[in-house]
Amino acid sequence: MKQFVLLSTLAALIVFVACREKDQVPRATEYAFGDKPSWQDEFDYTGKPDPQKWGYDVGGGGWGNNELQNYTDKLENARVENGMLVIEARKEPSGNRAYSSARLVSKGKGDFTYGKLEIKAKLPTGRGTWPAIWTLASQSTYGERFWPDNGEIDIMEHVGFDQDRVHGNVHTKAFNHSIKTNKGNSVMVPLASADFHVYGCEWTPQEVRILLDGQPYFTFPKAAGYGWAEWPFDKPFHLLLNIAVGGNWGGQKGVDDSVFPQKMEIDYVRVYPLVEKK
Image: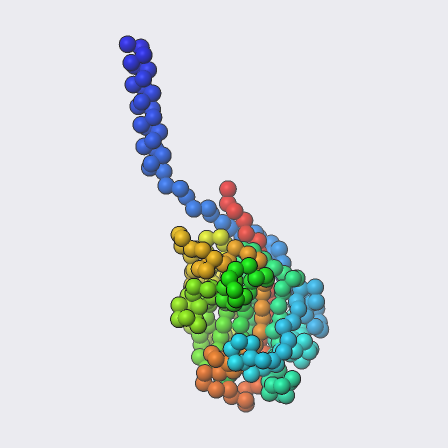
């Protein structure tokens, strides 16, 4: 009799535990971001951008988008003054192009896997301008083509012919504009060229969120079953800051030469590390 009671009790306990385990749904990992930047530039100096933090992409050739500018490392196109980074696009002969500009990159000096990025900026204006704050993979890991196979996150893009709108996007092998599967969104910003705004990105192993002044307007989650073709965002990326002129998108309505020179002013760039909540 005692053996029967013991076996009955054990069976009931097993059923109870099994039911409890069935009822429990695994929780997704929660993430937060550190309070202090792990990498930043406050632009509290004068002259060329800090060479410990920034390099340059230079040259013409269209940059894959039929752009019209020549990127240089000249002070006239990228400089720090009055506490601001100034990237300036100018109408002038430069290389084999009719416009000059700058494209700063943090590759090899500021590379990040996950984190919160915040860039406080005031944008240029005028038909034909195409400023961007964005990221690319710091190394080629996936596929046969660097882009789009290794991914891109656009924290801010703006085209001067659509003055009051900014865009946030991701590009991957599976999702990109060249095959009409782009993932992104836009938000109206009537004073984007008159006021400073904070353009942000929150990047975790689970999603990429694009924000304007702390408010998200586009989220790209890592769905079940995604491989690298859909989600290449688990490798180091770096920042790019630039103004393009014309091009497949920026030049859709032509270029108004009367607006130049045009500047993108950046008050700060801050990257906060990812922290996993316990």
